[in-house]
Amino acid sequence: MDDTRDYAGLFLGDTPLLDVRAPVEFAKGAFPTASNLPLLDDDERHRVGIRYKQQGQQAAIDLGNELVSGRKKSARLDAWRAWHRAHPDGYLYCFRGGLRSRTTQAWLDQAGVHVPLVVGGYKAMRRFLLDRLKHNLRHLPMVVLSGRTGCGKTRLIERLTDAIDLEGMAHHRGSAFGRRPAGQPSQIDFENRLAIALLKHQHRGPAPVVVVVEDEGKLIGRCYVPDDLQARIRQSPRVVIDEPLEARVRVTLEDYVTGPLDEYSRHYGEAQAFERLAEALLAALDRIRKRLGGARHQYLRGELEAALDQQRHGGDVERHRVWIRELLSGYYDPMYDYMLQRRDGPILYQGSRAQVMEYLSHCG
Image 1 (cartoon, one colour):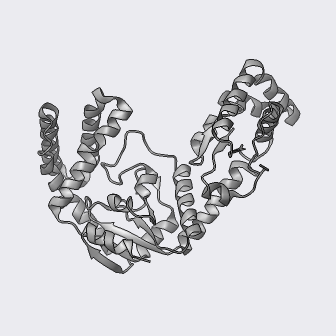
Image 2: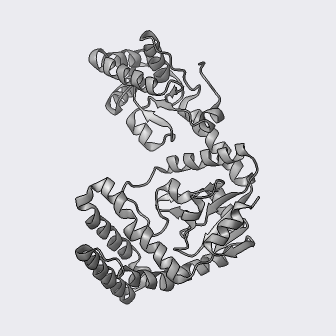
Image 3: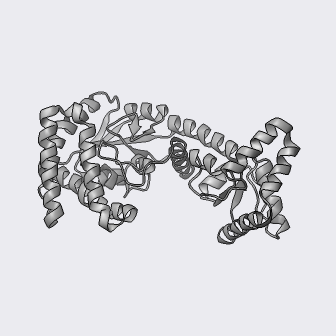
């Protein structure tokens, strides 16, 4: 395979990518299919950068070759070759498609392995995604999926082919209680995921894209929703899920109390999972203390503590319905009603989750 500038083809095909930038660069932003196997680690990159500023490019190259030699060079070559065996159709890149990626490619060629590189590197691919994101957010047809907390928006969009799951991309459930144990992606990673998803929708054709209206509006946890998308959410036609309170209590119980235990077990281990989740629920309630008011917060916290204690000693989760019901009806529902008044788009359809699923399955 030859070196490429076909950035759209790389993202549309979920092409495996070998990112040879330093770990600190990768952590700031990367692409979903990228693996970080750096030519220079963070310290080596820092030292080479200083040498470049003080003595120029050749001196920096000489230092890099000195720092990555012998066993260290062999180990990195072994890691790159193993990656290539697993991903024979992959491409490599550095920040600008310059010295680091060409050095990696040359070393691999000397070892009898050819890996093509992405011309322009990370910077060019990122610029491409930002340009396509802006274009698609302004021009793709869009339907906004709305509904009160607990109505099951995410459950519905997970079943739709033409849907954008913003909460999934942000790895956050979209409320004060939405934090997840593995944390969130960087802002750049969030934008890249969104841009690639929209690029794939554009490539498939002009079918409507369904996005979730987040209660927080501008933020999903700490991920900022791009301004152009915020504008589309405010202005686009909406489909509204309308579920009774008790159904929403059940969904909220499953999504925030019983369901996350498996995820917490994978992250912290089974022995710590429950207590970690309990801490997270109490901390989430405390984060909205000022909005709730002192008396209501104290009441809800007491109910949550009692429910956790009952669950801890007997596995019974029914007591959780008390604080969830009050939180939905007394706190989240008024917030949703206020948010709905600020939306300009017409309501295309309103019904139960099953009815909305049927409607959206034949929409567009």
